[in-house]
Image (tube, rainbow, N blue to C red; front, side, top):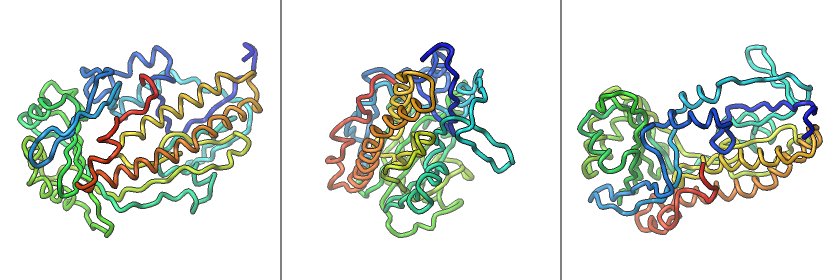
Length: 347
């Protein structure tokens, strides 16, 4: 682009920008937002999966250069020294508090329940599609004994698969305290339930503990050690296979979960978000000049690549979810046959 070209203004709603799209001074601080800043991923990094009942190691899933970030800390880092310049009046956002923002390109990156997606496709066409699978989550401390036992298996996380069809995942969430007993953990259980579970409030935590009673140590102890009153929530899984939209001449587009919300069981949500940001940035950098027309062409190139990739990722994750919750098919799942990460390079 010409040095004296008029800068185009891009509005990004809820964007998660990762290493490939970050300036060096911000990238250097990202490690401090890790759930455990002392853990540095490598090309050999793995996520171990165990038989939930026997404790047998089933497989070390390849997880090269993987990251687990504390969202609040991450967003604080991304918000450093932001410079926004008013320029043109192509897209205007009107917020409920009466404020508004105007720019040349609006990027909807506000997650699975994206209002930008709803605007582009209409409420019905943009609606999330509920699946036959549900999930329960808890965020809590586990005490020193359980914490150290889990860390002996892996410093960051472990997955557990149960013959009864439960898939579980325990990951450290915050190690900022000097006392391991005060470290927080994210505990997840998923299973197939076409009918409503009616789980809410304290019943969610009680149900998680009940399901864990047949688990081997140290996972059984971790679940049973969750203090009464621990925040826990439950929801039905849903997705939205990506479909083309009218980007209004390249003025509005989607990235991340707004473009391809998917289930959690293949670890592809973040990978595709990285790919979205990288591809869009590459096409913007290749613009011949800083004009709205060139920006529209860049957005079109990005969407042409992303639409089929997003749809495929959503459906592949859905199939992997189905396979992981049936002991007769679990070892046929892409997660067991392949790796967690796409071949997108270090991220």
